Amino acid sequence: MKKTISSCIQVAIDNALSEGEIRRLLETPKTSEHGDLSFPCFALAKIYKENPNLLAKDLTGKLTHEWIDHVEAVGPYVNIFFNKKAISQLIIQAVLHQGENYGQSGSGKGKTIVLDYSSPNIAKPFSMGHLRSTVIGHSLALIAEKHGYDTVKINHLGDWGTQFGKLITAYKHWGSEALIKKEPIKELLQLYVKFHQKAEEHPHLHEEARAWFRKLELDDAEAKQLWSWFRDESLKEFEKTYQLLGVSFDSNYGEAFYNHQMNAVVDTLQQSDLLSTSDGAEIVPLSDENLPPCLIKKSDGATLYTTRDITAAIYRKQTYQFDEALYIVGPEQSIHFQQVKAVLSKMGHSWATHIHHIPFGLYLQEGKKMSTRKGRVILLEEVLQDAIQLASENIEQKNPHLKNKDEVAKAVGVGAIIFHDLKNERMKQIEFSLEDMLTFEGETGPYVQYTQARAQSILHKSQQQTYKIEGLSSEYAWQVAKLLSLYPDKLVLAHEKSAPSIIAKYLISLAQSFNKYYANEKILHKDEHLSSRLGLVKAVTIILTDGLHLLGMKAPQEM
Ligand code: ARG
Image (cartoon, rainbow, N blue to C red):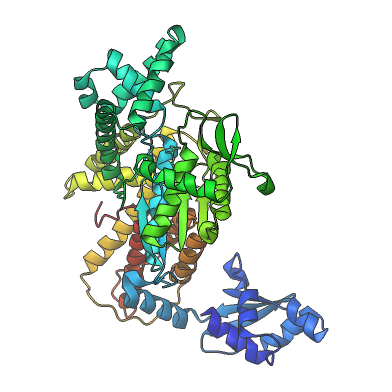
């Protein structure tokens, strides 16, 4: 649409600017009183050395097209008012015709993106930070797929490190198999806390823990068996949360998976003369990059989180030949990822520039970072269950005869939590509030879901299967149609900026605009525009459903 209008302007200004230049200059006015598109004449004024206001006036007489209703000059701007009927017809037809493919850019065809997200730590509760990583990562994967990319979704579990020495020690002293089987995360967390309490009085426990971790690193059978049991039990517990959230992965290779590939990487670093020794530890100095040195091996020979990430990146490049690799991880790891990239570059891996750390704002509690240690643990699974329960009560009140009640309650409850997270700009910090998360009115996921279901029920009532679209000229219909035409651009932006919030905010506007249309027009009234009005409703259901899916949410047909 913009392209056609730009070409039309190009002719009117005798090719003084190219079609592409004009398209970039075209603005979408904030209010519809200023038209649907606005062309500022400053660039033109420079070329012609003329007053922009005069040029704008002059242009109004020259712009004609079947899609343009009229044109007004306001100061240096040419405000273009579309022929609502002709354009809404085009938009609605395009959405109905392309269905869920509407907005697919194909820009990712033949390319692969690896996404590393969620990645909770074994034996620790799934934190709100991990929730953010999970829902943002999942949505970014879906958006990339929409653009045609192949994706590889990786859950880089935190399943290695000295804490496992502590856990094994604690288990040997005070653990109970039955309790761990019953509530693995809770019990393992308690053992971990107990270890630290006891170790204050009995420092030799630290010695013991180090010994157990060393055994683990040397493949000792008992240590390995306990470790793998803790891992399995934790994963089973995480799996419940993933099931609720509707999230899945292509790989659950955690940090431990890279253990036996690390010597080769350390050798390469050695051979390329990149390693230095500092206090007995092996490091890669990165002062030329303005970064702290990257610790590769501790003085006791233990490898580290960073070493494992360097190794994992090389493995992923070899295995998946990715074009881009995204790491959806909190902002506190920014230096870590810069170090990983810097070391990879020094090793000669030019693809290190294709690694992107995608940070996000953390949840705060009373303005402070949430911390597991201070007992500020919020169990995500409980939050999700609460939300589902509330959704279920709402259904009992409003629509007790609804079919698939449980399924809908789950879609709405979980949707509320996901949307609450994703509607925030990625870097924004969020004050944790259960109340906010469990609100279903206003700018929330359930509001969008409910609007979608309402639109479905109108279609259902009409019993029409096919739509003959002739375009609509009412202002309310026009606002809805115009929003529909913006969807493809939003999808491009959401991908480029790794910002699901762009889609979430868009869905709110579309839902609000649709609800105005619904409140102000007799959609089902039997006249010659009925089919066009229903066509618009159908188009709205298509886009709301698609947008919700891209956020990782369900769009129930009935609520
Ligand atoms: N387990 C880590 C944490 O909870 C996040 C891992 C992120 N992924 C990575 N490849 N480093 O902080």
